[in-house]
Length: 269
Image (cartoon, rainbow, N blue to C red; front, side, top):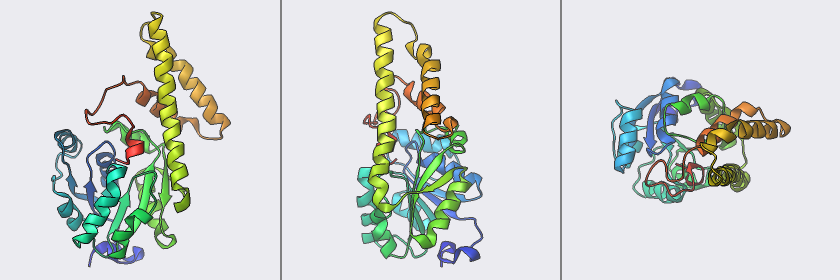
């Protein structure tokens, strides 16, 4: 029997962790959980870019195919594009890969635990955990996780497991109901996409009139504006200002050539 199949009070607290997906999110969460004492047993990576990221972020972790990662793991983190998540979960269920007591955690903002029903039917523990952070896919994100909130959706009986994993990663768990996940995803997408478009528009206008380094010119203004807006909204402003500015400072086209421009927050990876 998997250690995760035992009641929480009987577990050692150290789980074999498998990561499915080597985008910007998976390796970072893997590092955070490894820092809390969990042992990474494997990570999946398909593209050359994702393999490079996995090897850079997790140099001693074997790169395995998805079924092998799942079979070896007590805790599986599914950090894949949101469009791929339902088919992935169902496909692994059809091959009998999910195991009773196995913890299955996905990071897609728009999905709750219903998408994990095929895994739950096999006895797995379904958790939906989304960090409200624009990831860079580097170790810089580890520090930012400690200043971030995580949306958590899980069955009531296992909600403490999801909350504990978030705390282990340094974050603050916030429970979001299954029915509210689409609205939550819209809020995340709106905040990030709208901010990005406004920054790009304003820097473009300054560039057109000859202002050099328009991003740097607007930096203090945007930081203070976002800081003030978050303060008026009743949120600790330090959570988002640097993440928003740093993420929006990249020129269009920077980053992974395979990025479709929507951002990880819409893809769930």
